[in-house]
Image (tube, rainbow, N blue to C red; front, side, top):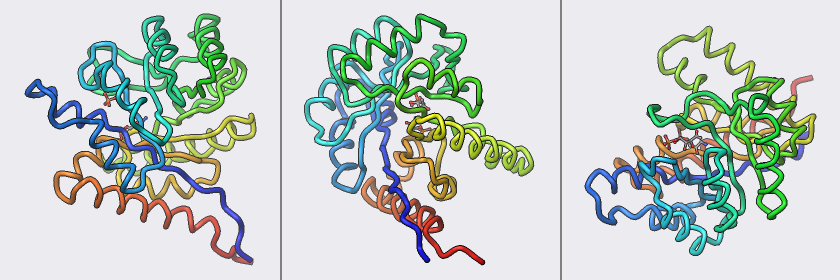
Length: 258
Ligand SMILES: CC(=O)[C@@H](O)[C@H](O)COP(=O)(O)O
Ligand SMILES: NCC(=O)COP(=O)(O)O
């Protein structure tokens, strides 16, 4: 007998369209145009990260994304007063609070939800009170996830970056151990009533694997898709990603062996 499997969404992160634009200054290529194309190609939502140093996405990009998209906008941001104020002004569908360091090349590790204490809890409350769905970008760590649920986050996004890096380095044992942690974390978060998302460093192969994890309801993917778009176009890259995710998800609905 086949099982009914909840669908999985694809959020396309357009940060690195802005990275290319900013390499030369000016306005091209436009991440908002990329976002619109991504939606036409089957993205369920758009993610963009307004970094404190504004190295790629600009404030005006975020505003234009909010104004022009008809799909949910996931506003990634550091848990700072400045970013909370911007989110409260722009009112995106969702915010994803992430750890941020100026020296990092990309997001390293998950948010320290426990260490964020009362201050982080207040920020989550403020955003949620404004009707913004709050997600916390976390490593697969049970205590951090429990605290995310305690402070009222609706969603956690599991950081898949370490797993992807182990795989890319051929460190199979470490990759398997990290994948096991991701699976446990997804089950744990879901049991606590959190919606589970995952992302960072995913490509066609890893997205297909994670799409087969039942509690995971959304993948956010950027860098790989924007890179792949150079070769096959953004539409082609997104369509291929969707096909792989659907194939992964379909494994869940396949008849179970007796
Ligand atoms: C939080 C996360 O994993 C990424 O979505 C984030 O946006 C990465 O930052 P960069 O896009 O600047 O690499
Ligand atoms: N939150 C993860 C995300 O939006 C995309 O990360 P990446 O695919 O650019 O590494």
